[in-house]
Length: 273
Ligand code: NAP
Image 1 (cartoon, rainbow, N blue to C red):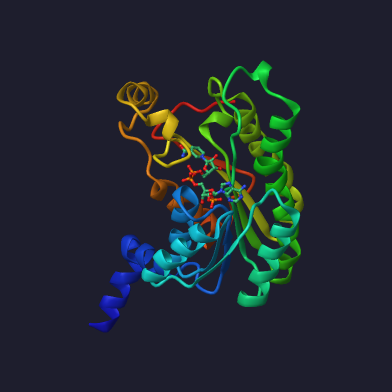
Image 2: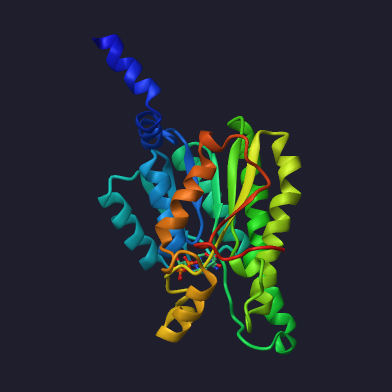
């Protein structure tokens, strides 16, 4: 009888997948930037639910405190600190704290982005480009560089960048931001061969329109939402959890042969470069 039950569990793919997903990241340490709300918070929660020890951060301590209490109320092992990813000292502090308190780093989700400019791309200034590329692209690379030696010590790791559908089809009036998101697709591919030598995978997700504070200008009224629905097959806006789960999958053993890839999560928005 026992034999029959055991066979049944192992040969039932649904049951074994469920068992795996609950603990698939136990013992892993995951840093998620810009993780006090929206997609970053959902990624932190999804990683924590799969057993990872999670480090949350953003620019404001009050936001960090709120995220910590929310995640702890869901029994997630989590610590947090302020970190503006555009600031070198903050980046160092984030990694040092993680290593001191959790003993190493296995996962980096680089999620932070800013968009200080809306308008005709020809009106964008050098200052705008420095800010957007500095936070959205350069910091993603520099954080990856900082965690690499720690991942090497653990025998491997996983990095996930957060790009956007705008990286495939630039949004009107969001030219510099869109270009920064295209750059992340390139960064993913550029890093994969070198990181792969140390068993570190690097992938990217490109969300469509997800209902968060950051994107509120795009869905604030009915007619804007209708325009978005014309582009998508699934007729609703995305939720942060739609992205968090895919990020956690990319960091799991189940994705151990995926690197240098970008997964679009857009409800069917046509994404081609
Ligand atoms: P969100 O809900 O508004 O959350 C933004 C988070 O970023 C907050 O935790 C904020 O906290 C933090 N943050 C902002 N600037 C930061 C910085 N310089 N350093 C560190 N943390 C910073 O935003 P979201 O929509 O989830 O966006 C997250 C990522 O998804 C971004 O990369 C965005 O480009 C991408 N994305 C979003 C959508 C969408 O439709 N929402 C679509 C495609 C891609 P503090 O204010 O405390 O710093």
